[in-house]
Structures are given as C-alpha cells and as structure tokens.
Image (cartoon, rainbow, N blue to C red; front, side):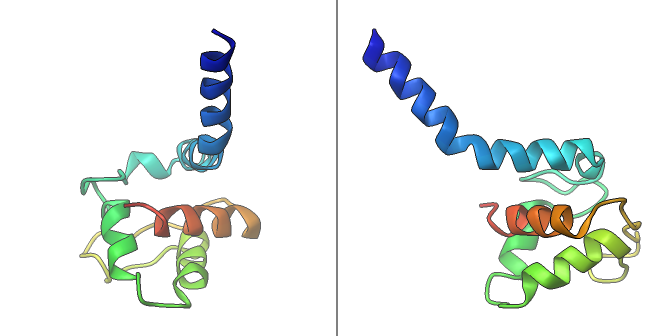
Length: 100
C-alpha cells in the first residue's frame, strides 16, 4: 500500500508543472478561447506548438503575443492583449510550445 501511495505522490509531483501552467492558463482566461487539442475561437495549443516547432525564437514571440495580443496569423479574429506579467507570459508560451 505504501508503494502505491508513493507512486501516486511521485507522479503528481512529476506532472505538477503541466498542471500549474494549465491552471495559470485557466486563471488568466486563455482556456475561454483556446483548447489543447481543438480549435475554439483561437487555434488549438497543439497546432501552435506544431507551427512554431522549428522556430528558436518562438517562446519570445508567443510571450509577446500573449501580453500584447495579435491578429492575422490564425485568421480574422484578433487575440486581445492579456493582463499577465512577463514571467507569466513566458511560462504560458513555454507550456503552449510543449503541447503535443
């Protein structure tokens, strides 16, 4: 029983960064327009990750778009600016780019 409890506890710590970033995305309202695996108002996170997979400056570009908003890359609906700090924007960008 102790081994099972330890395995569950260890798994929860290993998955914590992904949950923390999803929690941040939810708290900042990102999930209202985006989903990990399907297009809503904005593109799916997995599609964003695929598009920028070979772009070494993608994390910085996305962090800027998260903070300042953007238009025209994914269609006619603009993404509004978001009230996030630089650190939060970078964390969200890294999380989006890691989405499979």
